[in-house]
Image (cartoon, rainbow over all chains, first blue to last red; front, side, top):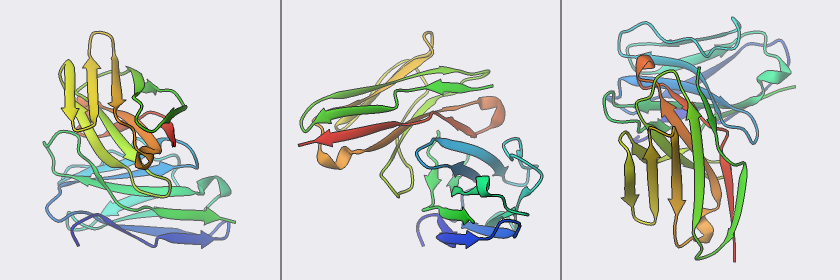
Length: 114
Length: 111
């Protein structure tokens, strides 16, 4: 497809379970970002991948959160031992590095932890 | 660190003009962006200012004053479809293209 895609669109899980969220960026985009958005709030930066460089993990809220990007394309955000406060919409964005600040966002994954 | 402030909500009628202000405090600054997000939707890029001045794109304009650490988004000839949340965001060049977002301004357009 032409845009950023994310799966699943919705995820309901029980507290303590692990979840994996997937992001397919726009083809050719070298930079990929994960953000978290709680209801009615702004976007909170989580992690940033740029090409083959080491990712910027400065926004990850705890060591339960991790992400990887395979082959410079698809990325997976993993949350271990989910807590209720992890409930939010997780947004992925990609950009063509060096082109201003135009980040293209996916539709997000709505995570609900019961 | 980075912090951005913008009003939480603005209400206006169709055809009116709305200005959404954004003030920021950053350790580094390489540009101010604006994004629009409809309820349940993904943020979409509206504009980017790296230099002082006004950028105009159709009914929307964005302004930046680097000396004042201040910018605004101007929405003209408001339409019902402009009801959405609007976020300002700054790029810290030291962190590449990572963006720090403000809390968002919810714009409600009434008939």
